[in-house]
Image (cartoon, rainbow, N blue to C red; front, top):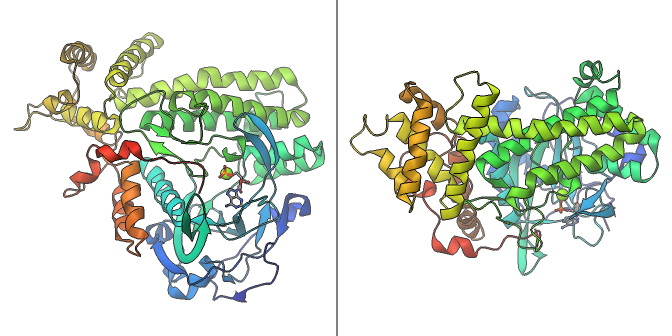
Length: 510
Ligand code: AMP
Ligand code: MG
C-alpha cells in the first residue's frame, strides 16, 4: 500500500506554497506521503533551472536531498496524487491517475507559479498493479529530454533534479529506482477532464475547467467573445491551438513521443510523460519508436492525426459544459487548417524562408519544396538532424564560398541520388534568390539544432550512470540545453549513430 505515515521534516526554502488544486476539493485527489527511498544520492541537479526560476541555490544542497528522495517533506508542501482517466491505444482505459507521481504543491517563481511533482515516489491509490517507482534508465531519459526540449524551444515539463538509489525495481530485468522532480505551470491532462465526464460529474468537470481557465488559460475569456461568449468552447480552442503548435514543432524536429494516449496529453500543450520517445536518426515517416506499439498507432507520421483524435476525446468530455455540438465541431475543425499552417511555418523556418510575408501561393509552393525534400530524405533514410544542420551551414557559407571546405558538398555527402538532390537544390537556390545567404544561414543555424537526444547518446549515459558515474548525463545536459551552439570538441555527440543504435528497443516499461 501507499505510505500513510509522515516522514520527518526537511529544512524548507522560503516559498509561499499555494495549493489551488487541492482547494478544489477531495474529488480530485488523495492526500498521501511519498514512500521513502533507500540510500539516495544526487545524480543530477539542474542549477541553471534554479537560476531561471529565481529559486535559492541551497534548494539543491545536500540538506534537501532527503526531500527530493521522498524521505522527508518540504514544510508547506501538501503531498497528494490526482485522479484522471483516459484512452490508451485507442481504447477507453477507465480510471488511471497519478500512479507514481506525487504533487507537492505550487511554488512561485520568476516564470510564474510552478507545480512540483516527485515522479517515482511510491505507490498511490491510482497505481493499479504498478510499484509506484521509476527506474534510473527512464528517469535519466525524462530528465535529459525535458531539458533538451526546452533547449529546442519546445514547450515541456521541466526537470529540477534526479535522485538515484540502489533500491531494486523489477521490470523486464532487475533495475534500480530513481526519482525525477519535475515542474510545470500545470500538470493537468486531457484525461483529468475525461475522468469527470465519464462519471457524469458535470459539477466537478466545471470546477476543473474553471480552475484551468482562471489560473492557467485566462486568455479564454477574450477568446469567448468570438465564440458566442462560450468560455468552455474557448478553452477547447486554446488547447486545440496549443496542441497544433506543439505537434508542428515535434514533427519539424523529428520527435516521436511514443505513447500519445489522452492521459499523456497536457492541457497546456506541453510535452509530458517521457517514455519510449525518440528523436529520429534516419528520416522515416513510418518510424515507430515504441517497441510495444505493434500496430504503429503512434508512428511519427501519425502523430498529428492522433493529436486530433485526442482533441476529439477532450471535446467530448467538455461537451456537457459547451452545450453546443456545432460550436464544438467548429472549434475542432480549426485543427485541420491550423496544424498544416503551423507545420508549414515550422518547415519554412527550417529552410530559412521566414524573412518574407508569404502569400498563400508562395506558401503552397514552399510546401511543395518541403514535401519533395522530405520524400527524398525518406527514400534514402537520410539522417534528419545532420541533414538540416549541414544545409544550414551550406547556406550560411554562401554554398561554400566563404569557407575553405565547401559545406554544400557536406550535405551532398549524405545523399545517394545526386541527380535528384541537385534538382531539388536548384529549386531551393532559386527560391532563396538574391537573399543574404549569410544572414539566412545564421537564422537556420538557430532553427536546426546540432544536438538532439539520440537514443544511443542516452543509452551511453545510462550505462555509465548504472555504474555510479553521472558525468555523461552532465555532458549531455550541457550540450542539449543549448543545442544550436557549436560546442566545439563534442563533434562525436552530433555525429551519425553507431550501427548498434538501430538495435535499441525502447518500450513503455519504465
Ligand atoms: P504511462 O503510459 O507511463 O503514462 O502510464 C499510464 C498509467 O500507468 C498512469 O496512470 C501511470 O501513473 C501509471 N503507471 C505507470 N508506471 C507505473 C508504476 N511503475 N507504478 C504505478 N503506476 C504506474
Ligand atoms: Mg502517463
